Length: 266
Image 1 (spheres, rainbow, N blue to C red):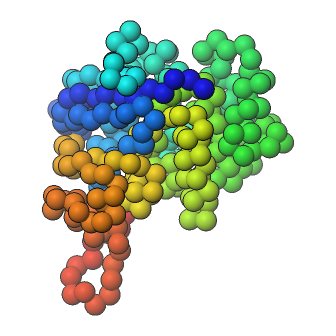
Image 2: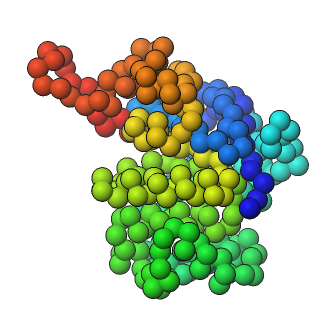
């Protein structure tokens, strides 16, 4: 198993044509920790993940991998090949993130070829086994798989390079409720067995509370507050915005005499 790595984000800023999507956001994830980011639609939480892995342009700030108390200053910047080997992302829509004209075998083989690995056969078989997929799925196309199976393949693709950090962008929101728990349990099992660090974006506060130890609340590109998952469960949020998210996540209750808050936050 690879040595666990953490992540340090300092004053991260993302600007699109004058619009500030993320404004000076800072947080740190310890090696082996699961960290959550929550907020309403447009709060900038998914943009943070994309900026970390180089899919969104950073207008300012710094991203670095860490190992305990010492930063790995020799590691490349986000977006480089070496950084992407250590930091992989799982996207929200498993069908949209998988090439529709490639078999599972080719989808898993492609990152290995890009990074120059020669033991593709062994790695593909191991990755499929780790996500609970039999070898019979190896030569199927994405449209021949269920939503849950496609997301397992997306997770296998992220794991195949043996990263130390996974960025999870709403990994279960596109799945049926009956499948969500299976995928979440799989992710938690993988984190413990591999010693992975997670940064997880979700609008579902229950999911974040279950999977993450700490979380950051965002609104309009800004950090509102940091919470431990235990504080969230006990409804000990200090900021009114976080409290409104908690009320929204509990859904609409008939007869309360107030305008219902939408439960879909992202």
